[in-house]
Image 1 (cartoon, rainbow, N blue to C red):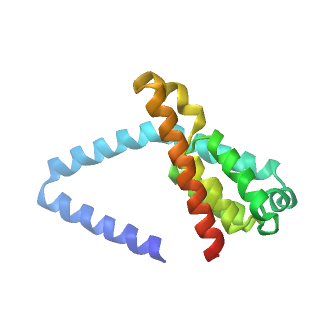
Image 2 (cartoon, rainbow, N blue to C red):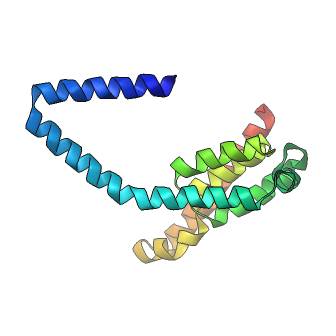
Image 3 (cartoon, rainbow, N blue to C red):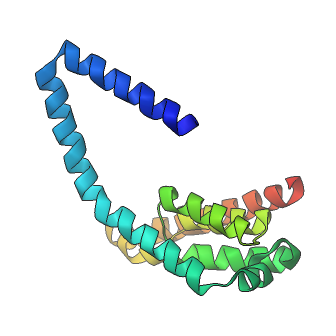
Length: 158
């Protein structure tokens, strides 16, 4: 329902823009399309990653590793796994939702999603190259610590 409303509002605003200034609207649509074309391979790759991950990992394995019954150990596993990989938020959140539907616990998914987006150990060499080793390591350590606190808070609340 909400999607239909948002698409309708976007369509109406696009029509208003087109009526007001056809050339600017056409240019904007072309720029948006080019941006979409650049983003599409990444989005498709991430969707493929989520699909393969969820097809390989059976719900029973997800529940055993990071289910709500796995407790603190499950959260630690999720923190470690999430710290290694880096996935953009528009993929991490749907992955978290799919994991919850498959039996993962809220605290464990919070740990996974937060570290996926904040820590990104695999990006350390690039960060060292552009910044320096001291700053890059401090950023990763501080991000991890914040994710641990966030996970603990979610564990207490949920």
